[in-house]
Length: 153
Image (tube, rainbow, N blue to C red; front, side, top):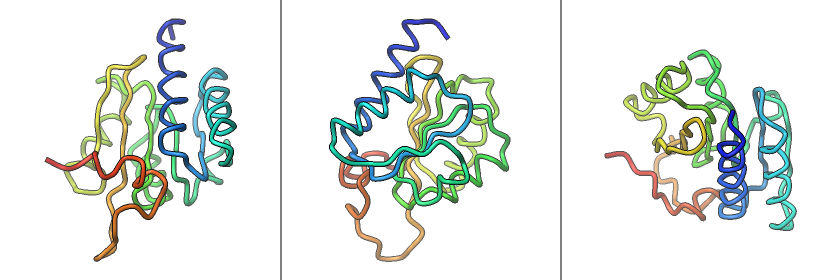
């Protein structure tokens, strides 16, 4: 990854963490040290939050940061482990990576809402849609901060 792209991605992650103030952030996949340091710095600025670095510890995460290098089964498992209303960031979500196509399919199925952003090598910002009837907005840090801005069209 080019240094400017790396710095841009790290700053995006830092801003996102400061904005949504997650209680639990899970890092999965081969992430760059700059990304992990940016997230840790943002959690420190927030004065709260825990950072874990394995998929096994991602259950119930408010924010999961991963790479686009996932099979369909792996990405679906990651989404199911994410808290309802939680946010998943897929780094390197360029058009030819399999994680991006799986995410697009999951959006069509109504499981997630997604924004594709031209940051670094491409970023997919995903919010898991609620499955419970009557679930009110604002129950997770991500929902409170994003206010449901990622809406299906």
